[in-house]
Length: 357
Ligand code: GGG
Image 1: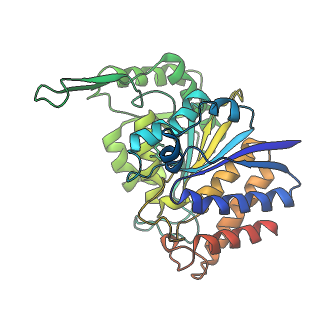
Image 2: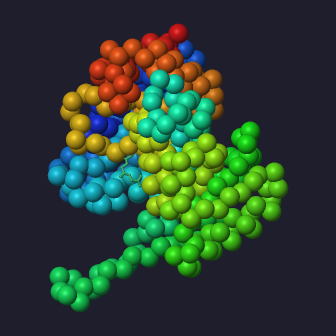
Image 3: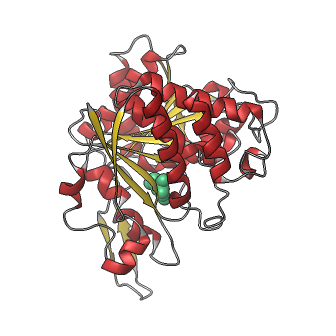
């Protein structure tokens, strides 16, 4: 069986980490006899916008809908296109139109990488953030009145639906059930945001009845962020709304030393549409073009994609390979965020060689 993968490098360091993501995928495909057919697309990036006045062609949905998965790099180049236009015109369209309502973001302290938190070693930080990915605070519902005057009014709604919230909670509870600690933490701000957030808490409580073996904590987002830094070992599966999940899934990897290694899966669990796999990091204009970005976030996202396509052994071989390369700690191989002096390519090639066995 051939797996059809749409490859979109996007902007900035997306174009630098993507070749290493593909190199790792191809090494795993060769070793495990997986037939991957990769097709590259030049849209969903700011240069496409500059040429065409939009981030995506009109028929993007039809072009992508029959792929088995989408492998994406990063989006955004604020000097060319305002961030809200590039993000809403690309990644957020994919998430919404392909109903990728789960954004799964592992957060793990890897061997060889130093956590900025004192006395933390691999094994101490190992949790998932499950982010609601199609509604919540990321709604385009709202507007402006009296623009440019001193009576200016700006409103943007948060949208939470029972279907939308229950389905992501169910995914998070199911995931917690598969983990040794069976622990679920829900992030809200129910004392300040007095309608949607207490309602989210009620939905968690209602669903917890069906999962008597999962222990549930509910935190306000402010103290939860403090506890990510002070007690990252408390967490196992953390479920949150679109905005809170976005923030937590940058903070979590930052506690593990570098956001450069963090992967994510934007999943349509029913498999009706392709799921999308991308590093958590963005296009990083400050380091783009220098060849020094850490490719592990992209490579690990590729491992999650293979896992999603049913190739558990191949996905695990990729994870084992980058963990081994990090543990060897050769400074000529590792990128600066991982304590080395190497390049995106030196780290990517070392990982691909290790995958090949
Ligand atoms: N590779 C992920 C990426 O490019 N992210 C850019 C970004 O700003 N994302 C915001 C979000 O995930 O909602």
